[in-house]
Structure formats: C-alpha cells, structure tokens
Amino acid sequence: MESKEKILSCLNILKRLPPTQMQKNAAALASLIPDYAEELYQKIDKPLDIGQDEKGNQFIQSEFNRDGDSFRSHVTNQYYPPIDDAVYPSEALRKLEIKANAVFDEYKRLYYEGGLSSCYFWDKEDGGFATAWLIRKNVEKSKGIEDGSWSSINVIDIKTDGKSKWTYKITTSVVLEMNIVQNQDVGKFNITGTLTKQKEESYEAPAGNKDLELFHIMKIGTLVEDVESYLRSQLDSVYFGKTKDIVFQTRFIEGEKNFIKQRQGLAGEFKQKYG
Amino acid sequence: MNQEEGEVNENEQYEKVVKYIVKNTPFGQANLVIKDLCKIIGNINPQNPIMLQALRDHNEENLALFKGQNSQIITSILNSQEDFYVDQKNNETIQVDHEKLEILSRSQVELPSDPQLNQLRDALEQQLNLYLSQQFNENVCGAYVMYQGDASDFTFYLGITSKTINLPNFFCGSWISTWEFTKTQLKGDLKVQAHYYEDGNVQLKNVNTFSEGINVDLQAASESAKQIVHAISKLENKHLTGMNNLYNSMPEIFFKAMRRPLPITGTKMNWNENVHKLVANLKQ
Image 1 (spheres, each protein chain N blue to C red):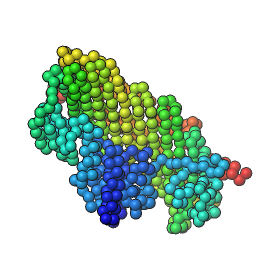
Image 2: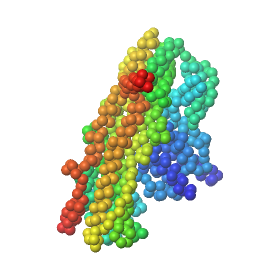
Image 3: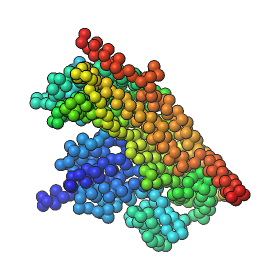
Image 4: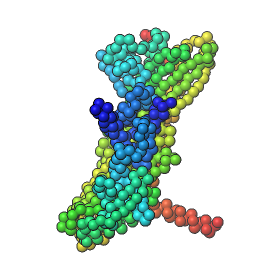
C-alpha cells in the first residue's frame, strides 16, 4: 500500500532528526503527503503542550484529548477553545477519569516533585476502553541547565475477555531535552532523546467485580510506574551515556590514544611471550 | 500555463523541505534520508538536482572527506566552486561524487601563491597530521589548510574533522572544527554531534567558539605552526574535559531533577493504599 510505505519512510527520517523538533519535522514531511498527514501525526511522539482553562487551571494537550483544534481539559471536561459537537468520554468513563487523575497526581508528586499530569479516557468500539496518562515536567535555570523538559506519554489499551480477565497493553514514550545555552567550558550543549517501550499484562478481576474502577487504576498505575522507571533508567545510563562514548571515540581525551596503544603493545608482547 | 505554475510551486515547496531535512541529518545518514525522501515525493531519484544540491550543501557544512587513489580532500564552503573544488596546495581543481564520497577527476590549474605562506602552510599540515594521529580516530579524519592574501596581509583557514559512522550499530558522530588566523588572532568554531538510534533516538548537538591572541612569525614557519596547532589542541582538549565533567554530573543535576528513580521514601508507590485514600477524599 502506497500510503503505508510513504509513512514508513517519514518515520525512518524522523528517527534520524532531533526528537524535540518533532513537530516541525513532522509538519515538513506532512506537507509532502498532505493526504496522509493526519495518519502521520498520530504515529509520532512529541513534547507535550500545556493549555489553560478560563480559571487558569492547566491541563496537558495531546492527540488523545484533541478534537479539531481544541483540547479537552481533564479538570473541567470542557474543550478549549469551545466547540460544538465534540467527542466526550461516557459518563461512567468520566467518573473513572476523575478518580484516575486524583491518584496519578500523587504519583506525579512522588516521582516528579513538580510538573503537570493529566489522564484522559475514551471508549472504544470493541467494548473496551483506552486511556492516556501524561506528564510534562520542566526544569529551568537550575544548576547550569538553561532549560530541560520531560514528556511521558503512556497509552494503555484495556480489554476484557467478557468474563473476569482484564488485559492491559501499555505503550510508553518519553521525550526528553536538556539544553545548556552557554557553559564556559563547552559552549552551547543540547541533548534530546526519545525512547519507547511496550508491555502487556493480564489480571483476574476482583471477585464480583468489587471496586473494579479502583482495580483498573491500580493495575494501570503499576504498569505506568514500571515502564517509566525503566525508560528513565535506560535514558540515563545507556542512551545519554552512549552519546558520550561516541564523541570520545571520535576525538580522544589527551593521552588516551597513547594509553590504548601502550596497552595493546603490552598485550601483544604478552601474547608473543606466553602464546 | 496553469499547469506549469502548479509544477513550479510544487518543486519550490519540496525543495524547501528537502533542504531542511538533509541539513538537519547527522553526517553519515544523508544518503539514506535522501532515498526515503524520494520515496515520499515519488517520481524522483537521488540524482535529481534538488537532491544533489542538498547533499552537496550537507557535505560542505560537515567537512566531508573525499578519497582518491593516493589522496584525499575535504570539501567546505571555502574551496567550493560551481561544480568543482579547489586544492590550493596541489594547484588542482577536483571533481567529486557526493554520494560515494570519491574523487572523480583532477585538473591542473594556476593559483596565486606566496612562497613564505606556502612554507607556513606545509608546516601547519605537518603539525596537523601529527595532531590527528595523536588525538583522533583514524576511521575518517582529516584536515585542510588554506590561505588568502600575501605575506604582508594574510588569513589562514584550517579545518579539522573526524567522523565515526557505524550504521549497523545505529550510531554516528562527528567532530568538526574550523579555524582562521591572522598575524595576531586565532579564532575557531567547533561542532560536535552524536546520534544513537537503536530502538530509541538520542542526539547530541554541541557548538563552541574560541578566540586567542597569537604571534605569527613567517620567518620561523616551523615554530609558528607548532604554536598554532598547540593552541588549537589545548582549546579542544579543554572543551573535551568540559564535556566529560558535564556528562559525569548529568545523573545528578539533570535526570534526578527531572524524575527521581524512586520517591524520597525509598520505596515504590503504594497504589492500593493511595487509590483508596485519594478516591475517598474525592467523595468529600
């Protein structure tokens, strides 16, 4: 299918460009394939934007609470700017949404000590439902960093087998940026990264479906916590560190090359002597 | 008439996009990106003038290294002409294949030259090659030296570059430093890039500028060359040490400030307890 190939090529290219420029990069590519632009936008992860309602309460803007050019607030359940004929979660789902936001806010407090969180739920045609648990955290002018931002996008698909088994499939993406505008030793320094992971778990519902809502929130929350922690650790210890390795194997630290040669020389001598 | 206008607009539009995308592509991946762009645009191949121009600009900005039988040349904006590059030292014009990074042909040409400046240039080349062998990975590295003017009023241009390209293991990096000096002033720009994209996508972009007073004595070419390359080497080493310190402090000053590995309690969140407590609060 032609559209699939073109979108795949777009995604291939996006992977080679800085992830926090995703909006601009995707828009540039989308202008080449205007008929498939919507489809492309749904497949990308970009830093989350923040919106405000009339009282100044903030909420996260994402693909999952968007209708046209308006975004629904998890606080008021209204769209901003207001629109007629928009998509809303069912009443039952909205109740679940309110509870989930209260709990997720606590998670955000424990791990992020700041930032903004939003949970959005929506009904699905297959009888299940889905939810996006989102966090945006900024770090500004602290300890030499001019600005930094973290966006986590957790999307969970929830299905039941009709009896008592519930399956939760989570896809989590983290988009990260660290920006130093002027450091006396290194000048302007910018690292951006994105990483995604998927996980699926199934659980038996509590007997008689007691407190099913709370059950969902616990299960989803635990998955979010596990996958986010994993991604954070990977980005910290593997991915960001890898950029350092790449630089230092391109341009060695003073003396290092001699050191390596010396070591190799000694190893060679050892081999010769002792076979 | 209408169809022509429509076609011209379409060309202009995708030319802008192609230029932007290729410009922001890490060195080593441009050919792949251009192939994908051709697939997206349709009815176009990498030999299209727009693609070739974008690739050429990309190579010049990244000081791409071109290999011939016994030689190499770095292309930059400085030695770029209509469809060839100037090799000042060997008095040649060179044609290259931007896709394959190969030298296609060379022709003799007469270029203005100054014997004293030639001497300094040769000495600088010697020092730079020594510097490259000591501090850089042989993978793909090189340097150029060019000058403008004469013994009474000159500007020298130096370029140093090294690239790590390992596509099977999903990473690329480049070190690109460009310098110019007059009798009394040395100025430089450094661009460091790294890209790792196995499963994820992480990119480093780092730029720095340098400026230092020097004193060039054309009568002592060898000494002057050593002084200049030594100054460059010191500045680059200091930059690298700064990077090392920055990376070492990243877990604490950046990652921890973003998201703790664990809550301050030292244990994971107790979902059961919190869910019941917080939802009960809601009802009030």
